[in-house]
Image (cartoon, rainbow, N blue to C red; front, side):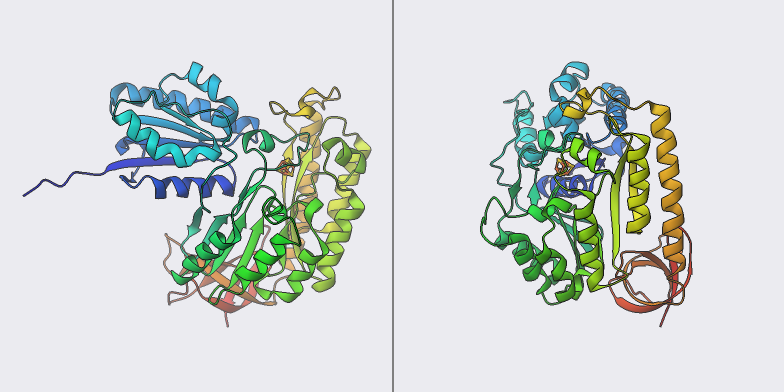
Length: 441
Ligand code: SF4
């Protein structure tokens, strides 16, 4: 009887955004000769899928590589791949500093990983992929998701906007959309396999399709088509840019209940002067007009956002305007960060860099304000009835379940029966700054 050859094992560590989570899932799909390892210790291939948005993330990768080098010294069969945005931006430096890395691939090149591994096994390649971005990638939409019933589809890569603080156009390249038919086929396949919520991903998701379908509003058309899939309960998308947030997109929330009553809309600053320095192409009036249009459809429409504090040149007055904008928008939550200079970006060269202590102080004030707003909004949910899509069961306590309301607020539920994947009417009974508690009705 022929001996069954043991499959090799792959271990993937993912930093950064949902796009990277989706890419990691894609790598698992591509590496058909490999099964998932329990940890780095039983893997023959370790993949670090990296993020270049924040300075600390890059340092984290470099220090992780230092630890993996020690492992590689005692494990001759171990291969290490660095993929994602740090690989794209710092590939040459990484090769110089950490010669033990076997493969370096930018985000648009992950499809090449199986071939590189094969070629290296056959001894026909040195193993380093090109450091240029492949703009003509043939990659299909990638699928992922932390929970079985909720999955992501990458519908586009890259960004054409060149905000002065952002590395994405340098690391992910220009916008490239996936054809509508392929996305729809993937979405149908997912729903058929039991998925109930889909999140469409792109760095600048609401400019989807402008490269492929220059006429009309391709993103709105795509959302309509995905909403029409029978069995899908919720459709989300991220990250949308206020610049490309059209009236048709706002109006769609009123027409398509599956879109829920929530959107993530990064404002970055509440000062027109700073927005201009950032080259965001929108002003505060435009941001408020979008929020007003969304809340004209549903007064309790939930908006979350991103804010950068301490952008070069941000004065006390600019910062006060950001606080004023947040007080007016009353976001359900805010991802807030201190500005940190990134390679290749114009803002890195701006003279008026803000001292670290000032950034820290501003961030603390902003986060305190937002904590109060989020807590107040969550407490106001007590007594409301909400439709909750149940995402998963607690691993520790089998009768505890977690889901999300139509406003994307997390809810903790108790049930004696398996309710994962079900949409339930829930009475909200308690709340704190991070989540709600509810009981099934
Ligand atoms: S729109 Fe978003 S992804 Fe594009 S450059 Fe600006 S911040 Fe970066």
